[in-house]
Amino acid sequence: MNEWGYVIAGWAVSAAVLVAYALWIILRGRALSKEVPPEDRRWM
Amino acid sequence: MTSKFAVDLPISADQPSLAGPSGTGSGGTRVLGALTLVGIALVAFLAFVATPADSDMGDTVRLIYVHVPIVSVAYLGIVIATIGSIAFLWKRSEWWDLVASSSAEVSAVLMGLTLVVGMIWGKPTWGVYWVWDARLTSTLVLFLLLLGYQAVRRTSVDPWVRGKRSAIVGLLLLPNVLIVNRSVEWWRSLHQEPTLLRLDPTIEGLQLFTLVLAIGVTALMFVWLAVHRFRLAWLQDRVDRRLLVDAIEDRRSEVTV
Image 1 (cartoon, rainbow over the protein chains, first blue to last red):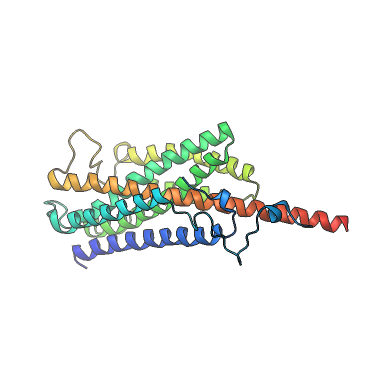
Image 2 (cartoon, rainbow over the protein chains, first blue to last red):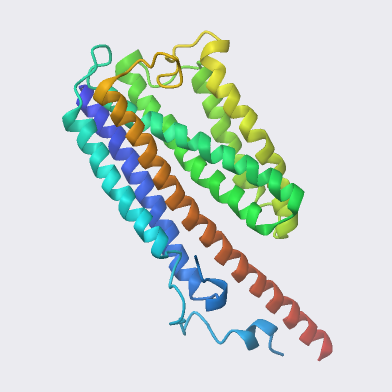
């Protein structure tokens, strides 16, 4: 693998992990918010 | 017998509430998220197209625009987690416990990425993915400590016990950051010395601008992730409390009958 291969791999791994983590937070938050009353989830 | 939550909350998974936000997002986080995405696009353009290859590192310098911002912001998150831990032990506030735990979790993700991207950078630079070098080993220890912090939070369902135990681990995080940061100076190391935090930074011009911008954008992304993670933890605590109250009420009703 040449230098660009390592560069692409590093950026791709970072993007994949961060997108997956962000998606997990958003989807889990949507699921939990259905079980919590509105007055307990009024964000600033 | 119905629980007090059942009276107060006519909401169930089958009847999603239409009032209030339907997740962890808000107007502020949406603006922050949009700014972060624009910033990431700009950093990617600068890193891949606008900046030249480095005279020493060649094209692998483009990994520095990911590696250095991620580890720098992970350190920032650890500072916040330690401050949150101290504040929790002092104030006994759930808010500080969740600030600390949310920051620590996002930092754990970033620290894991730091190790992976660092290994990917190490292969073309040093010829190996991993060596038991002072900087790499101390970073691995810090990552394991962050995982330990999360594990400790799962040892008790009592919020106060959970918060106290994890806050004690949280106090150990910042000293470890100092050890990692100074490791290249205290011990002989394969890892290069600090790139930015020195009187004569080893990069300049557009490369320096790109690196500083990438750190700023990664900090924005951290805030977005940490705020959403805080709200998720807040929602989880509300659900856990309701389940606990329901379980206690059910047990009481069984005894009464």
